Image (cartoon, rainbow, N blue to C red; front, side, top):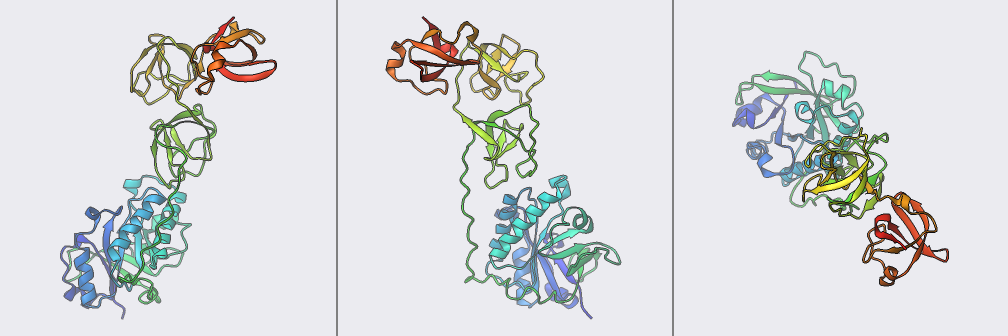
Length: 409
């Protein structure tokens, strides 16, 4: 008659494997939890593996996941691969995916991404991999994860899951001589003891998995960008296009994430596909008149107020290095570069065909330097759009310049 499979971690204490061997047909040993750092290795892992190897007890391993993205799942896979190197596992490597009180209400789509990222990384290194989860997770979070062997946790007299699985954890309260007072036991089916074959041999001659090529990101922290959509998270697949803010500063970058750039510490996430423009930062001064589409209640506020009656004003105070450094009209509110739409110079005093000169050393509209001769030449106004004025001579465009940097002649 088949004996059960036991799974153990440091919480089972120092296991007497001589005694346990008589009661089980194999073991699944926790190697650790979370990302690939030594302090998150299971403190009994190495001893448990050595004892099972010495006593010829078939064993596999599992890792308890904290991943919230595919990138973090790959790091967790590397955690396992570091710890199994040099060992021969007769049973699968399992990914424990059910830490709901940590990850919150993550979507089934995100769970699928996480499971696939982990499992594919293990398979690329020659491992045989499976997923561990309870019945609720299999039915509501992991229903689209079908390419890996399943370990079902359902503490009952009979499993009710309707898809195939090779291992069923039927209790967490078993008595096993040589281990702790309470133990997890599982029943196995079919070819469970042999299905891993030679795929989980991680001897010293096993090559390390090929590292994934680095992702070259176009933008970095501090870049001021415009965008046509936002995402709720770094891994969200659904863009939000009905947005009030279309410009902001990148305040965090997560490499390899679907949407790697966080805007304004919380406005939302963006990726290269929805970013439309990278802006050269402008420096404003006290006395500058500016147009804006939102205001902040303080120089350090993170929440923008978009339902505003006033959309332009004069900068009356500057707090260097503040999140929102510019005070408008001595109290209307605070703004930063991400909500400023440009200068509010009264370009209505200029008309097409007016003659103007460019203020000495003023840049063009994009902030680029102009040729020295430009400042000594009289030009004709060819086009006006807001504070952007196109100037030229003889119907030939010379430059676009901010209205504030032009002098009528």
